[in-house]
Length: 326
Length: 210
Image (cartoon, rainbow over all chains, first blue to last red; front, side):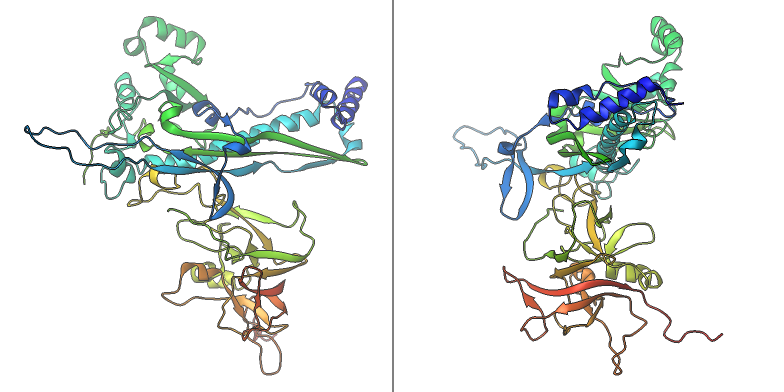
């Protein structure tokens, strides 16, 4: 049976949504929340690994070969090594320059959701607000998916030491994707060597793990993690905390972060970029008795440092990060 | 891959309804194996990848015989398409190229089901395009550039005037220009052909008996 109070609220929500007054539109977010949840959803982890920076048209760079918006970034320069000379010697020249690259933008959007207002009024829950939340989470999930495609490309093939076959090895003189054996305190520590093993010597700042594999850390006993922590993990499970000096982000997106895998990321300033030109925007339209809405955003993000990301698989046999060949 | 854009290739819906949310078909692409200009003829692969038509013909000609034609609104090298790609061995370091961007990986197309009239730069200039000439996928020979896999060419018309049933016809020429091959010169000197999309899949030209 339709709850008359909720129906009134839905009427109010729909009425407010179509108001030209932005203040009144905000009231549309207040509604009822009593409904059966069947699936856990989460916000995006990309926005935690690489916090977004809003940009404006003034930040965009024009290109002569395209009308697409881009931002051109400089890369920290490198210098040839200093050298010892006898007295009377003069220095060799090296031209001052630095590489640069483009941050490209594209758009992520939700589907467009359409309904007859008469049907919306019959729901006990605030279905518009719920769809609004789902659209937002779907957009954040697409950000994460696209980011992990690039992450998996950058870390290179698993246990491939050859620079000829593994671009990660060729660029940073270490593997970026290794198996380490089952999770123990020792293999966890081994995994932490991934980023420092490259010729860029970065330290990981963040570990990304799924909500299944995290229980393997909880399973580490007193011998492995010490008395108080072992007891705390046993009683309360894993809450977000620092382990081995890292922040750990736990995700339920097991398609993107598989079981027995941990991704390590350096601090954002070493990692790449994340610009939001238009952050997530909800477009709503109410025409006669039809209501429609969709979400969109325009973002540009990169992972531009192969030495700032690694993938550790707690399976197989132990492979050393610095095991490389020509 | 360091990408480059250009304005020499285009696809314009010059008539017909082109609502922002209508008709466009969007799907993933294979940027490792494919390259195409704006306006290229594309087919869906059996795994749902939008590829230049000749690439689908080369992979599985039986499917290409009844594939729905569609024309790419974006080029493979457009900056909102080219990202989101693999990073093969031997490529320049990440910081030197456009790799590492999370953008792209998807192309939008106008499918041949649409009530549109289109112009495109992606056609075989060696063929002749008269009004009502059927358009089919062009199959490039060895040594031709990869982008020609998205070209169209004139289909076969029998001496009787009937069309060849063994060809997957994706369009019909609607108007021609005063050039030798019937193409039209656009405002920035691009050569285009003007056509209506149609969907007429190849059929058995010698149907089995009852």
